Image 1 (cartoon, one colour):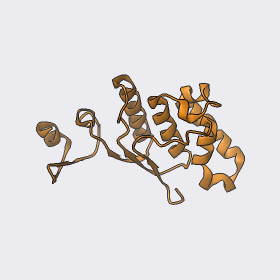
Image 2 (cartoon, one colour; image 1 turned 90 degrees about the vertical axis):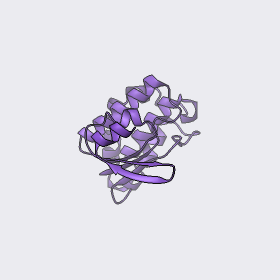
Image 3 (cartoon, rainbow, N blue to C red; image 1 turned 60 degrees about the vertical axis):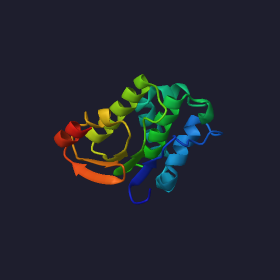
Image 4 (cartoon, rainbow, N blue to C red; image 1 turned 135 degrees about the vertical axis):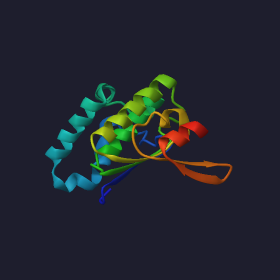
Length: 154
């Protein structure tokens, strides 16, 4: 976090016994010394980006749905103000409608200038990504490709 890198781990891994708000504060832990007001403003920004989290602000994170936990995991990572975001399987175990919502958030983050390294098994969605390259490992054989060649083989 101190170097501008944050991780959104596979299976969300929120702090289940902490409230949504406390999870967000934990995400800003490395920045707490810089001032409480800035952290509070950033929490408000996360609530604007993820309105459902505002509605669940005092709820224990472990009681959120899978999609809500994924949004919280992303918001918590963003609280560290990363320049580079690592995301591991953000669609894992989510309903298709929630997957679309999560991927829209990822697109928005990318459009806002956050660099993202995304590990994702959903090749269909990856082919809709607007920029970058794809790296695929199949049967222990790695291959790198631009979007067009990746679409043809996947």
